[in-house]
Image (cartoon, rainbow, N blue to C red; front, top):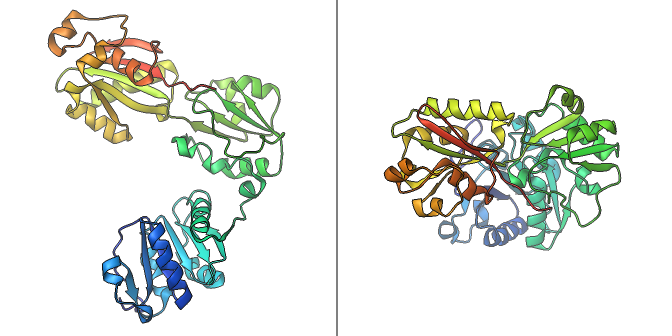
Length: 374
């Protein structure tokens, strides 16, 4: 491709990452990385072409590499630049929008001795990518984010590998400051995966773990990370004065419905039930049902709206589960003695549910919680 001022080039995006090189030694490193990162697209200057680029899917360009970045920036999760750090900073500066949107930017020196995390270290994944690239090249990773250097909690990434989401990003920055400045920080965990500590060193003495909000409030922490599927009560809200609320994915919804039930009725039943239980809809992990419902349009529409997987079980699998309220009528039509109750039990692996069964209109719902050993 020939890069021209004012014209955004067309790039072929096949992977999650782009590797860009502009020197002879940089091309060597880029080709090495391509063999290690199968989900990376390589770009380098056509004057270094070797003749096998088309077969390897390598894209060649002529002209200033600066003109390539407007096309790469929105197209990739991360961009690995084998270009000087100063030049990269100048090229990406006009393209920056927000740390929640910008791709991770990593820079490698021309000898492949250092791999530097430059932009979107946490949310954009540049720090993790830096470690992976450095390991592939036998280079030294260079990270400057305080939480990584100090080996403490990265507030904006806390629980992300488990799918935890935060309720609001308003307090991410001040809570992060409290963590790295070694203020008294409470981690309140009422649900979710317990193995969130990433380092082989002990938890810092300034961070203390609590099993409930009120116990943490009694110790008057300066900041808090609260992990719960519950809606907080009025007297618990004070924990969020300088706190971030995380929603772990722990709620399993067992759903049974009549054929042709609308998405609106199913969604209304789910929302009403969760509000009665004082549970957050953000903590729903999955919807579970019988395989006869795998093509139920209303059910599929609700799952698609919220990004929930629909887990389907055969009548035989459901009948293996203990049921408090088996139904001969349900068995007559489905071959299972129940749908919502055994489906939720099967998914959670527990014989106990928060809500065994509730029926209204065309929908039956059961609610279970995923628990984890500690």
